[in-house]
Structures are given as C-alpha cells and as structure tokens.
Length: 236
Image 1 (tube, rainbow, N blue to C red):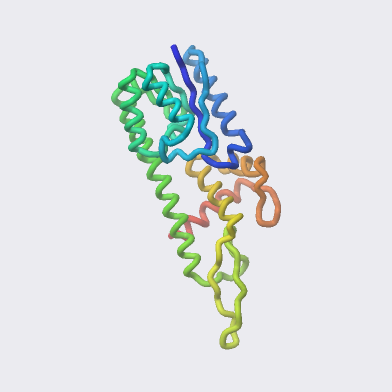
Image 2: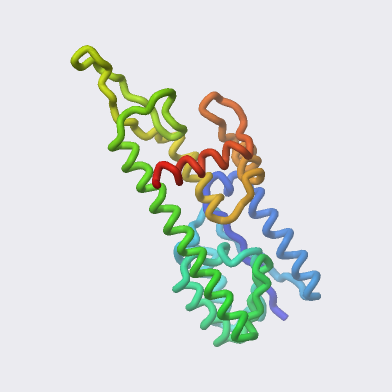
C-alpha cells in the first residue's frame, strides 16, 4: 500500500520555528503505526495558506492521486488540507474516484462511508465560516478604531496614539493609527486561533519564534485570550 502523509503550516513564524511541521509528522507516523501501514513520504507545505490548493506540496499530492500513485493519505487535521468547503468537496470526489483512503486524525474521518464523507464536508464548511468570520471581525475592528477618538490610557496592542493638538483650550481627540509590527503579531495570533491552537501553545510558539510584547517581554497564555477578546469586543 502506498501511503503518503501531508502537513502544512500557514505562517512565516511557524515555518521558521519548524515546531508545527515536526509535530504533525510525528502524529502522522504514529497513526500509520496504528493502521499497520508504512509511510512512504510526508509532503509538506511551509508558510502556505489553506484557502486554496495552489500550493507546491498539495499540487504534487493531487497529481500523485490522479496518476494512481497513492492508496492512502494521512493528515493531522482537515484544515491542514483545506479551509474551503468547495475545495474539500472536490477533494472528496477526487479521492473517491481514485479509491484513495483519506484519514484525518483529529476528526477520525472514514471516507469509505457516506456518513464519513458528509461529516468531512460539514467540518470543512464550519472551518471556512470561522476563517471568514475572523477576517470580518478584524476588518470591522480596524474600521471602528480608525473612526473613534483616542481612548483614555495607553492604546491597545496593535495601535499607536497620534499627538493630540490643542483645540479651544482642550486636547483634541485623535484617531489611533495601526502599528504595523504589532498588527503582524495580531495576524499571527488570529491565524493560530482560527486553527484551534490552545492559548498556551500559541504563546509558546510566539516566544520560540522570537516575538515579544510591546514592553519586550515574553508572551503568556492569558495575553492570547486578551488580544483575541479585544479584537472581538471592538468589532462588536
């Protein structure tokens, strides 16, 4: 039996640390042992988005499926393959057509049954909803902060205050402006959160990759929750 593993990380930070790719490979090999099959190769896409199949590793895997060079594909989680419900539906059809067994460790999918294929499609649909909702929340938060005046106290992480000129004897309230370096960190945090990573794992990954807080300290798991809740709260 020709068995291929597939892994993916979406952010540059994860690509540089290598931790997530290694962890996925270990889980894939462990699953292969449970299934009493031998992994021929683990194909990886590093620093690639799951929004489409336009990735070098995924293209190669799909070509192998189409040419009959694969009997089984093992991944740690469905979102490593795709975050698009439409792409997942196409994947189900392709694997079914070529009699390829697909195993997603996190969801325990069995594509040999109609129920398994249905559950796979529903999970992909929910993952796509979470990704799009997350993007909408972030966009709404940015628009709201730009429209609002400068809040009392220090600006929230991700934004910087502008100088407040005097107007009629009072300090004029000025909109906050995005802090590009901190915005990048927020995007990394939201990306990990959308994948379902725990706050503790997210903080460890950031620290391992050299990301630091505004004051130069290390990240803690409570801070992950604060940033995620702050973005959600501002959006609301």
